[in-house]
Amino acid sequence: MHAVETTPPVTRVDAWAVNTAHCQAHYQIVAEAEPDVLCRVLNYFALQFLTPRQVSVSRDVDVLNIQIVLDGLSWHRAQVIGEKIRNLISVCSLDVWTPDALGAGVQMAMAR
Figure 1 (cartoon, one colour):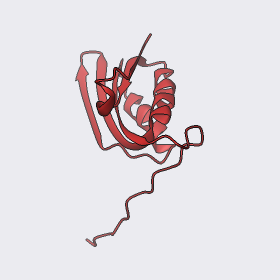
Figure 2 (spheres, helix red, strand yellow):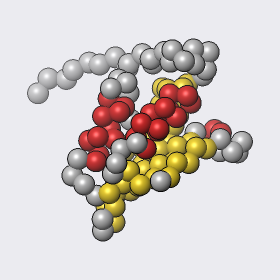
Figure 3 (spheres, one colour):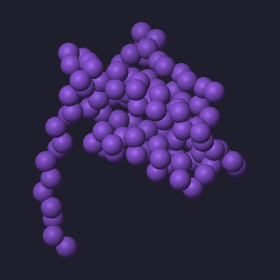
Figure 4 (cartoon, one colour):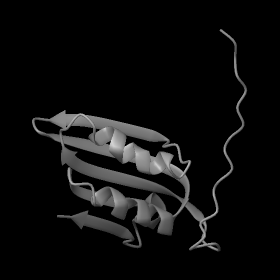
């Protein structure tokens, strides 16, 4: 098998928040345990050419607990993606926050 060299992706400019620094976003999602939920959630990041740093999923009876950590996006973009994920019919709740802003209380919780 051949090794393939890759270059780290260049962070994408956020057209709505050009002067905003990029952050690390943490998503905590509770969704109905349906076979396609994880793919639909991760697709929102793929459409923005964003690859999560970490994805963790556990199933508890009829719900999925999904944790996603992502680098290289502005806080505004993190919130927009969170709103889109929240609109999925199978998503019960979503929290998104940045670890550096926890002390300042910057967290967006969205629940139905």
